[in-house]
Length: 390
Image 1: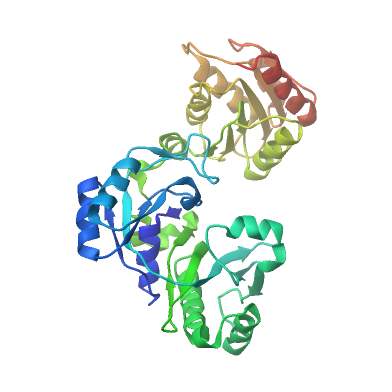
Image 2: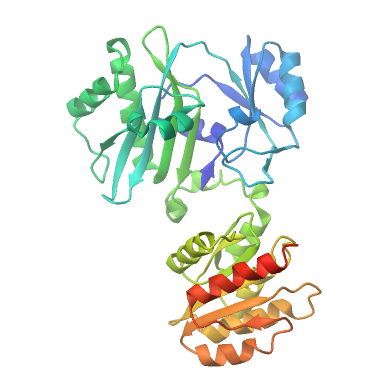
């Protein structure tokens, strides 16, 4: 689960990490009031679940409350498109008004799970800021790694030596080390999968302040953190993805034309990769959970049929256990019943009840092709989009 910057900073503040101080605004007038209360110049930030806001006009400086009001009016209700959003962007519902700070140097810090080693790992760079990703792509060695124990334990002396090697000045070594240790505590305690501070400003008095923060929490662990689960922003969550979740389907919307109907996260990712390798563009990621009924799967398929950008459905299912192949064919029939819009279906299934499912699929009210294997299924789906691009 992604946290907005304001909520991420609220969590970090519990661990004593220095922050500029800010308030959420829901209207231009409220933005002006907050700017007045904070005093001096402020940063006006669009609160969306994506990075790259600064380069996309989602972070602006205001010298006066009136200027903060104007910036908020420009942002609220608009769709902000960044390098980390879908092509349609994300709607800005809230603005974060934050005290602006002057600093001449900053660092990049983040904690992630190293999936190869299965341990939390500190990533750090001697220079932070909005150009970090571009700079790191040009010079990957600028990002240094420091693995921790699975429970976050570490040798403070070794960690201090790592920060020294990174180039943290002696004047700020103590402050930065304390912040890193606080980030580790927050990461472990909250079951996070990512905590990122960029930039971490090095202030003239030897302290360090987190100017921006991003936190992603493990959704499967939220039962241990009801206070954090309440920050899920469900009122503004993607309605399509939320409906899918409610129907036992893990679903992520994308910008392509090929709607994927797949069971299993691994098979879903493999199908996604194969479509891209073949020159196609997936419209979604889908993982049908084992307990999903035919009606629930039909709801997920209906979400794809209701997407005007979807030109073909690619079904790639391995039946077994609680999800049989004929349950998928039943779901397709339910989803297309009395529906004005249908699209061609490439129906590749294998495993339990595959023969019955293939026979049922031939009766769908839309052209249905049954390929021999996954490779052919992907090729046919990509070819269908090329044949009928719009």
